[in-house]
Image 1 (cartoon, one colour):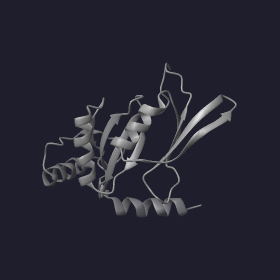
Image 2: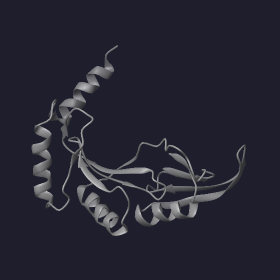
Image 3: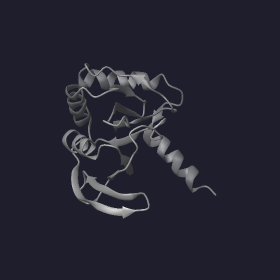
Image 4: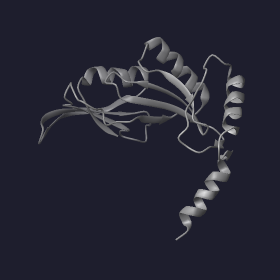
Amino acid sequence: MGMFVADLARMQDFYTRLLGFTVTDSGDMETPRGRLRFVFLSRDPREHHQIVMVSGKPRELGFNPINQISFRMSEFKGLREMYRRLVAEEVSELYPVSHGNALSVYFHDPEANRIELFVDTPWYVRQPLRVPMDMRLSDAELWSWAEREARKQPGFKPVDEWRAEMARRMAAP
């Protein structure tokens, strides 16, 4: 993903310090928009960049066209730790939710782009769905709550059943 930013240093600090990205490259380049600064970021040593930030975003825009930038976490323990760090950082618009098929934490980066950190659940429910989630619950309590909430939703099924159904539909002519 690439995005224009207004304050490149502030955004680079946020994504490296708080979200754990590493700068893999940076430099300036002449473009039709003038000379721009590029910073490439990754959390995966196999990927040169997962995000590229480019200077040149006007400071005042009437509308942010980015709905959200989503990052899958490998385990709930990491999501909980990131939530703790985000609370300490006092990020804006911090809210944890269950989507039934994922447990997510949303917040805004320094330029008001909405970020989603999430872990998948073993269930499918029809989307969109957003149920506020209480991160004060223990892991066991939270997962039990999440399953009870998911089972209440239309279309609830194990995600493996949903994936098999999608594979059949996508293979059909």
